[in-house]
Image 1: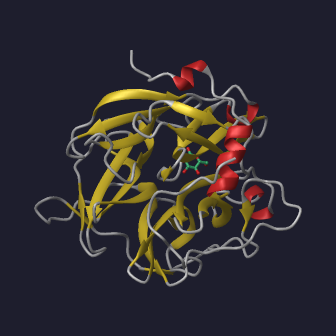
Image 2: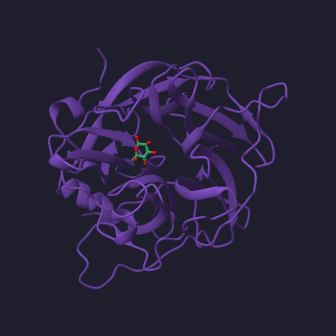
Image 3: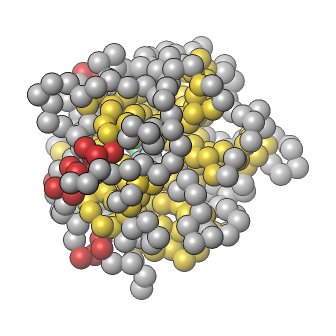
Length: 339
Ligand code: BMA
């Protein structure tokens, strides 16, 4: 296969380990996982499902912190190497457009995306039911909320890192109020990040058993010479509850509601103690990647067992080749998703 290119910036200092000899899997785990352990800061019992970006000479991240009263919130973290993190002791202090405090009742599963020099946090919050919250910052000091962009119920909001055909693009997963037993990924577009429309269906749960209950967007899509690389989660049900695995798909570069390829095999599924044992066993929940356009290296950040943060690695050639070789996209995935 021709070499696949990441279209984006170089990032020479991203965390990285070479693929172990004899490893055939498309993602390989960091040997020092988990990178964030229990009780990471006073008043926070667990950090998981979190997102990071390069910032200045190092990295910045938004972290789902489960407080000791059980309520999730988002905490800011900074790191020199993307592996060892220092967290701010207080929740991110969101404000409204006038600068007045504007805190949601809870906030979880944040994603973090840079578009044209502004950083956007997208998370799940209560707005008379679980739905997407969104805020922007330019300096990681002031975090201004974009008031309630969606109505309930919705989760797993993921922004694309650039406009497509002049519009901001967002993946989301319409849900219900509980442990949703269904769910497809949709695409919405906006001229201003406030008003969203032209909603299209991207892809539904798969017929493969590991993703046969629901799916949801994971990390912000990575632009490549083959299309948008989407790392997402797929869920199956067992007699002991849901199991969350990591899946991969490639979306059309100009029309990302069209799936070009979608792996019928998972990329990573719970196997290690920190993925199988925790507050919710058997969860691998990707929320972010770091990537280096020069080498094609990709580091995937994922929540493990709703308790820890893990890191896994791949390179763009390996992951795209795996997705294409295991392609199981169906007619409904390949269509534009307009009705
Ligand atoms: C989902 C979300 C995630 C969580 C997962 C497994 O519904 O709430 O935050 O990781 O369930 O518990």
